[in-house]
Amino acid sequence: MLMNNDRLHIRELVERIAVHNDQQAYKQFFCMFQSRLRQFAYSVIKSHEIAEEITSDVFIKIWNKRTSLLNIDNIVLYLYISVKNQSLNYLSQKSKENVFFSDEILVEMKSIYFDPEQLMITAEMMRRVQMAILHLPPKCRQIFKLVKEDGLRYKEVAELLGISLKTVEAQMSIALRRVAQSIHFDINASVSSYLGK
Image: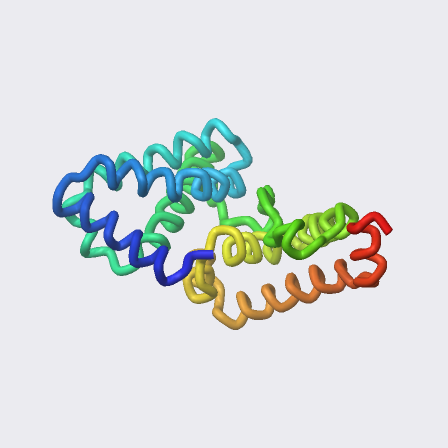
């Protein structure tokens, strides 16, 4: 999740790119978002190769328009919307018909948000959490990923997906409840198992 320090760092990188043509800052900016945006593009078009191309195109446009970057209020949301639009344009050109941002979006979950050593979570519990996330309805899973893994705020997800803030809140509530239900377990048994007792 993007914290305030992250957002300040992003703003600083954007300023260095826009004002000083700083290629090192651009490289850091690229590394910070490339993987997340590629995964988001993949969730729309379901092709790793095309997702890579779309993400690269967005970053090329960022560099080419770098002098106007400071005019963008929310660069993170701007990146996601750019990838979404490029992906939909690709699908539209491919099918030559109207394509809508589908609810049937495949979201690859790269990580679970717990530290097994710190929280002593068993392999079984991690499996349960992963299964709970994978079994969320597609739109719910996508919203959960955008918030928890990509660090977007609820308002940003609502704007990105063209849905209401209340819908994002409701979907996150469903996702968190299902994940929580999946990890109900006997803490004493889990700790004993972890300690080898």
